[in-house]
Image (tube, rainbow, N blue to C red; front, side, top):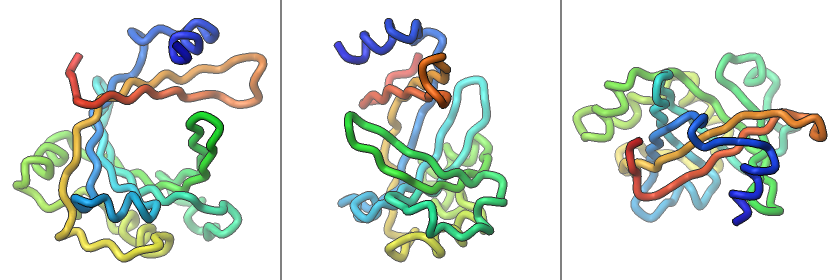
Length: 168
């Protein structure tokens, strides 16, 4: 009911949303997620594909200035309910074929992540990542709506995630 109220309040239509298919790479027991490390790949309908390394929580003041100058780097705040968590992420473009090859097991997971992403991971991750121990998880279906409201100081990106994945 809260989702419907938000859609109505901001005059949003799920039919206008950007549709995504998202995969995560972690150990079967989610060891990375439990330490605040997220490795993911996204396919966006009608758009490109990408891979992301995300670390959360982070204190933005502790993130080296050199990362802020790199294309693909972002500091953001994720809000779920009343909980707000700051994160730092580094994203690189991917070919859709590359994601499919990794998910099918015909290509190594670490091939989805650039040298800069691996350096970012080494610099900010609270744990060492052994790519050989990771598995592909997903896909998760996501719809994403970006919008602005005159009563808010910043643009908003609302996402709705669903499991299991259902194309369309």
